[in-house]
Length: 302
Image (cartoon, rainbow, N blue to C red; front, side, top):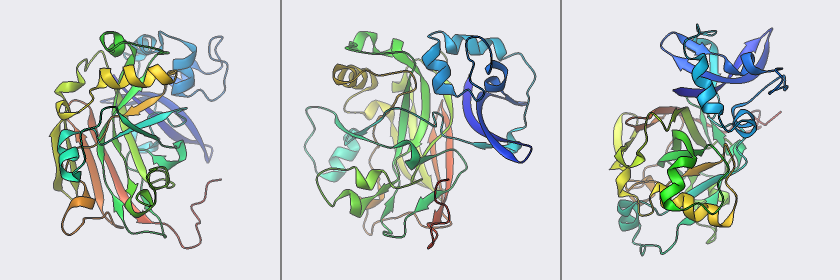
């Protein structure tokens, strides 16, 4: 299944929902489930559904044979999980990226977090901030947790995965390097992409078979198998669940391969008008354009 979160227009107002993307359009599962006994919310989101029902993804299959409600052209993609409680990102986790940065192989996963408002969906613009032009791409595999995970072993870890998506860890490199902590450079408003959809883990059970490619204006800049991870997905779930409960809808962003813009000579930075694509075979293609932050910040959140 391809599960998406999106906005639709109703009587001139934007309304968020989620559903299944099919060849004929979108089945609006959020609308069908809202205001039921199990899901009384008038605007049900994917994370809430996953939290309320441990069998939620299996239940989604009941809708697969229904007719599409909305054309894909009539929606705006949201991040797959627009309101994730935790977005845990892993740094320095591909062997090729470790080599190009000249770092030692880490003994434990290098972790930092992203805020939900730093992420946009598929086909939505990433914003290059007015305080920096050092806007770098990082293609990554996102792992979406499907049920509560605490002190999970590697052997059990994949049972807790709902599915996979593409992620662009848009990074403002000079701010990232201001201190030894990455937070500022990794959390600029609308600087990262997450989508276009979640492919459920029953269809793609082994993320080690995925291959990731990042293209900027059609030029391949990152190209690596996910099997090049220093810490693989079961190891990341085991480690993260040892120190925090992983809840349904939480996201682990597993790291980026070699080829980032910062280490190139000269560096390659994303700029307004660019098109960046994160292509993970077996998952999908996340596409975003780059725009500049308005001088008056008219894009401020409402």
